[in-house]
Amino acid sequence: MPDFASLEGKTALVTGGSRGIGAAVARELARAGATVVVGYRSGAEEAEEIASEIGGRAVQADVSNADEAKRLVEEAGDLDVLVNNAGITRDGVLARMTDDDWRSVLETNLSSVFYTCRAVSRGMMKRRGGSIVNLSSIVGLHGNWGQSNYAASKGGIVAFTKSLAQELGSRGVRANVVAPGYIKTQLTDAIREEAQQQMLGLTPLGRFGEPEDVARAVRFLSSDDASFITGEVVVVGGGLGM
Image (cartoon, rainbow, N blue to C red; front, side, top):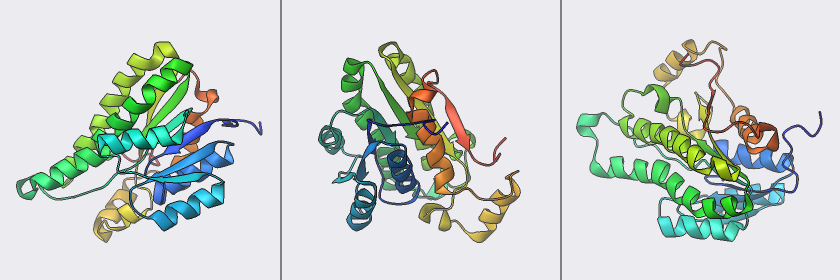
């Protein structure tokens, strides 16, 4: 089925789209036929390169700020697909975690999802259609040592999305979560080698994931072929955390 999970004629916004999983998602949605807006906070050169490669646009915005998130959605236009991927880590044990480390992770990872979903919801409800895919993490489902702030933000995304799916479902708007396991990106490359090997040993498929593995799941959930799927969490982790 060459047209499976097609996004032909649709417009999509991907936040955090300049690198890693976000860049892979932007490429995959464009490959499916979507016109893609690449949202980014930093990494302008990378974002512009991705946008040029896929025939889309790059728009700078700090989605942890409500006004900028709203502006980003407005500049993106009438959206059929919203993918919230922007995220940061500020790891540390709770006893030594600073207020700023807590707030910055919650604002960037969780509040940004609220801001963009709020901004896009009216238009999608009015058009009686749309797909929202929020990127969480397996850490948001199982927790992780030294990542209480990150786990809280990613777990919050799951609960938020399930509530959103219930609110928007009657208007034909779907909301789902993709929760990656250990995926090879700049973010995870910073994890110490011992911890990496421990994660690999707990992954039944015996390998780390690629950004493209996550991107394909996002593409499916964004498409009309997933039209009866909402409020769900799809774990892309090679069996990690079963």
